[in-house]
Structure formats: C-alpha cells, structure tokens
Length: 237
Image (cartoon, rainbow, N blue to C red):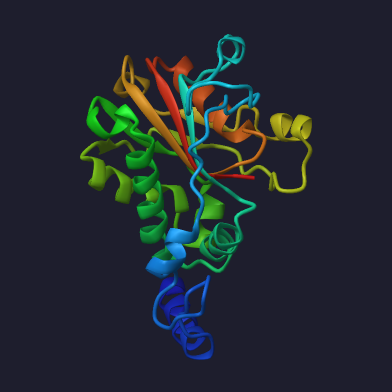
C-alpha cells in the first residue's frame, strides 16, 4: 500500500517537476552526456587518508599501519557542482534513476585510472548498508544500486546481506570527526562471516567525508576474516 501511494506521489511530482539534466536543464534526462564529461575525475597521486604523495588510491606506509584498507579509490569530489547537486537529488529526492550515470562515472574513473580492479574478478563487491528504517524511508540503498551497475560492468559478484547496519545512528552530516567515530562505532555486524573469510572485498559507498563510516564497516569485515579490503567511493566531501 505504501509503495503504491508513493508511486502516485511520484507521478504527480513528475508532472510538476519534469525530468531535466541537473547540469544544463536538458529535458528527459537527469545527467546528459555533455555534463557527465564536465565532471573532473580524481586522477591525482596522493594518499586518500593523509593526502601525502602516493600512487593513486594507495595508502602510504604510515597510514597503512592503522588502516583496514589496502587502497581507497576516490572517484571525484563533492565540491564539484554537478556531483553535489546530483548526489543530493539521488539521496534526498529519491531519484533512483541517477544510479546509472553515477555507475558510468565510476566505471569511467576505473578505466582512466587503469586500476587492476578492471581485470581482477577475485574481488567481491559489498555496498555499505543502510539501517532498515532509513531504507524504508528512502525506498532504496544508493550504494546497493551503484554496486549492481558496477558489478555487471566489471563482471564481478556482489555480496548483499552480509554486512548489516544494526544501529540506526543519527546523521553524520553535522558531526565533527571525533563525534562521527563515536556515533558509528559498533553500528555494523557481519552476518555469516564464513562467506567472506579469506575473500578480497571492494567496499562501496557514495560519499567519504572523514571516512568514519567506511572505516568502521571495513573494520568489521576485516575482523570477520576478509583478506584484502579496497574502498571505492563516488565522491569525497
């Protein structure tokens, strides 16, 4: 009943607010090809944690000693106007159709960065989960939609329902880094750890700000027996 009612609301919203490109207002498309090409990809060589010089996506030796990640690939930056507006529309206006162009952006980044992820099907893709209450409110998990598109393009498998968000934590948006770490601590649980033991994981999320959420999710997976974990995020705030 709820989803039927939501479809009716969406129908009238489409009439009032027709689909148009977030970048240039071209009709009948959320992100046109021209605006997609305007988005600057992060192809710079720096450590994604401390930003000191390092090979693209690689965590420097100092940061590696206290990180559950092998690499973290940051596709773009939230300060990019089109990215910022598109992610906000995706998450808070519940426009799931934006998952496809976002998936294209990520795949394009992986090709341009020439990462080995394109040729290594030993990795399994795990999207950072939402709490069931947040999932019900939004109607979809944005990271899960992205994972489906990326997995199909790369020919790798997605593992859903392994990482569970057991706590409905308050929004991280207005919290400082120390508060974010405390807020997200012990928010995740790994179900059936035997299914990821000694497996290589790509942990996918849409936004990285301080990295608290991604790091806590990776810590839980590592504790459950995952071998290598690579972070992949659409944008860094």
